[in-house]
Length: 81
Image (cartoon, rainbow, N blue to C red; front, top):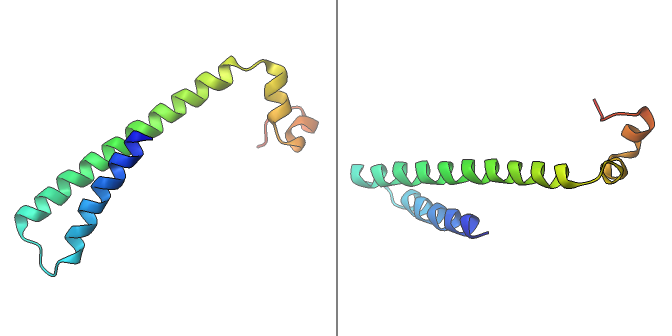
């Protein structure tokens, strides 16, 4: 959650750039740097979330995994296509 909060704060900084009529070149450089940090943070969070989900599902017993599948997948005997 802390990472999402930090990214939100950085987005506010970037949004402020668009409020001015003609931002100077230095401000554009700062905006580019902020956007790079934001994208890096989002990439890290997506990767970490994916790894966490894999870890959680790997720890579940097979019965629990079958119970969580949509009914159509259980009837056909496999995951949805």
